[in-house]
Image (cartoon, rainbow, N blue to C red):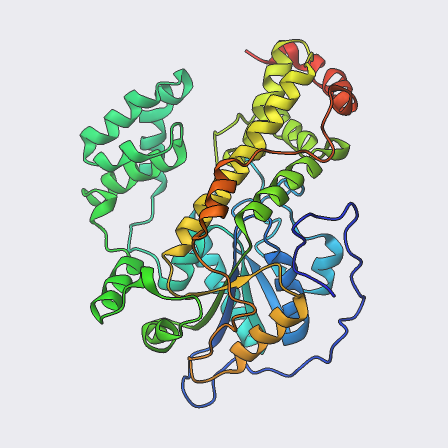
Length: 444
């Protein structure tokens, strides 16, 4: 029996059949009677839940193409840290918005909206099924509900903003830069993550272009949610198998979205994430990709690519090693690994919180057999009533309600699989010494 993911991943990946062991069905991208809107499948979930594999197998079954909604997979060279689909998988099924930008370039949610919507129309024009998959919540929210009517930046304004903030960023004066933008008319920037210079620049651009704060612009998702809740439904109380939103709420959207959120028991998810972080460090892995980013002249947290979890921590670790002429202790390495794992678990927790308030998603237990999940999603795609419910056997609860599970989560501690003793990281420390010592003089 094949599963989307294992609670405790096997040492070697499961072999995948060259051809799916089922008969491919024929699908149409339009509803025949209840709606004339094209159908679009959306698959999301926390990191490590198995959404990429599900999307791949689903695409084979429904004659689909995959659009990545991952803010890191868009970058060339960032393969391991983003769990990017392999070249073989991309040859099996067309993937879009993967490997399209150099890591020095910024990518925004607005650009994703435009690119993903364009790819959706292209896929539909070929008579195929668009399958959008990824865990970047804001990307998916804009893709589904639309983007705010915020003015695009002009080259002149961008240059002016970059000039105003350049000295602050060079000298590391984040708080002073934030206050400058607050005085310009946007107090909301005080909630930005520290050193998120990209978003700070963008918000200042909007002020200069429009004369108003970015918060003044109507957000389609907020309007949509208010309309849905005013109809008597509380989105926070919508059960994952309840079709109320699909029946009533989504009819005003541009496409007939069929959305699924994959998750699993929180303890199993955390263990899987910890093991996955370890796996990314084998054979130099994400460290080698992070070294490449540093060699390009990029610094941690300086743009979209270097803000990504895993790369940010690895770049910091390598910079500290460079400052010590390539020397690193096992304690330094384990501190970095622990930080990487913790940041990844926290990200998964934020994803769960984000999507818990999204009524359009049906929640599915990712530990259930792959064939069962595929069959249900195919049935949901063909369904025209909008009332198809997730069967209890596949249903995933949104909250941790069991008191025992709550206690276990509070007591959770990482138990590594590969890196346990100081000797287990010897090969990595040797690699760090050989590759980072030569960069000592370039770090100032």
